[in-house]
Amino acid sequence: MKEYILGISYGHHESSCCLFCSDGSVEYLREEWVSRVKNDFRFPVFSLNYLKIKYPNLELNITAVCLFEKPLKNWLGIGTKKGLSVDNYVNKLKQFKKSDIYFEKSLKKVFKKIPNILYCPHHLSHLYTSEFLLKNKNLNTLNIIMDAYGEGLSGAIYSGYGKKIQLLKEFDTSSSLGILYSGITEWCGFKPNEDEYKIMALAGYGEPKYVDFIERDIIQFNETTLDISINPNYFNFEDSGKETIKHNFIEKFGRLQNDKSILDQQEILNCICSFQYIIEKTVIALINKLLLKHKEITQVFLSGGLFHNSKLVGEITRKITTKILVSPSPGDGGSSIGAGYFAMLCLNKNYIQDNNNPFIGPKIPNIDEHSHLFSMVEVKDTYNKILEILAKDEIFAVFSGYSEIGPRALLSRSLCCNAKSKSALERLNIKIKKRESFRPIAPVIHKKYLYENFEFNDNSIENSFWMGQLIWPKKSVEMKNHPFFHVDKSVRAQVFDHESDLHKKFIPKILQRLLNEGHIIANTSLNIAGDPMVFIPEDLYINCKRLEIQYVLQDDLLYEVL
Ligand SMILES: [Fe+2]
Image 1 (spheres, rainbow, N blue to C red):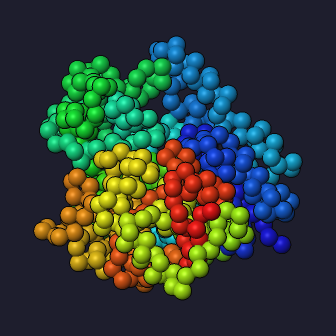
Image 2: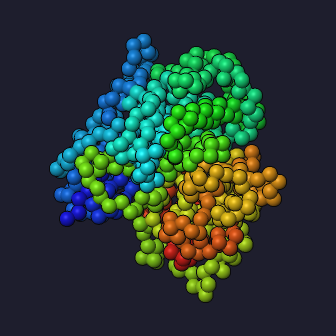
């Protein structure tokens, strides 16, 4: 008889569930895919009901449910000190009512019989998500977890794996590089905890002219204690009733002028660039010190929301030769995976694990059964038809295989075009996806072209399988002229390895052939700007109609949108 263990994360960022089955199968769901509410952070009731329908015996055979954090510890961890603003305490009371403190009560609304409930410490959820997705069984592993905050901390460092982990260091919220980055995101007029990737892209437009000032007055790294101190005269990390950016910061760096494009405000861009630079320098110094102190370490795993920053990860991996891997889902949205894995460890449930990869979302439904929405294109050779689409600078959708866990589309639910064509790329990026011009669309390139044209740390190349890091071209490489390069000549490529079982299994064969033959495919998520990724054929149809996409590739068959 099959048994199940369920991990859940919600309350802050994207909610998710991850179901582990004793037969070795795993299914991950992001609440926004099912609820259709972008960045849905509520209790994942839609996902749980989806799982209950798909697995009719789930409720009878569920061994445990594990939440990704300890709710009360998390609530008490920030904004509860004396002397904060009245608004802060009002916010805290509101948060209490909406928080995951009522986890058990919410669970009772979905499951009649409440299973064994466990709570995984916040940063261990990140650690175990990495451990599961990166298949770690190496005791000489260093886990560096850095995020905004969780349970009163902004990060932690552990060595080991499984039950053999050892805590080496914790960072409290006063040294949160995650909250600092969110504060700068808000200062630039973007949504904090959501739009940090835009700030990362903008950093390339600035000059690091404030680095000396920031190092002297704002952020210091102590090489002996490994503490990171951030001057509280510039940032407020505790009081939710006040802005994160303080008066002294505004005095030094000014304010965004709302009537001008941010790209025309060089001092703002210089400030962003300088903070990005210091964050990179600080984390690189931290890793170097740790590697010096712990000579037995052979690999470093990075997780936590800070490592969504693919420029940070790229700079780390090109400056440190040790194998350094970032989790394919480093933020809280992926933490249901770690929570479920933690429960398996606690309960000594050694479920077979043969399915740990970034494609553990549900199998993508067959669109053949929706002949009223899509019709198969009758051509002798689908490959040639795709070549024709690319040559005409047209865009096609991919809806095939298994859903990638995110945050990035990895050719299961993607919009694609010829990445070498400036006009196709601009049309896809700006007209169709309505993305800012400062964020170029990422290409998928074959590993052999990577070796020929880019400089990178071969030990850490796996990060590029899930677009976790930027890479930089070799000097005087002709490819730099391609339109997928960022202004600083970096590129956040998805690298395709024809020898990788992961790619052979999960990337449609036609796309594998295109990549093997030297084509470079632009790849962005299959959704309308501001909407969640498509999940069912009806979402696909609506998206294709609104985005004016004519073709969909599924399992090497091409369909036309009716
Ligand atoms: Fe976190």
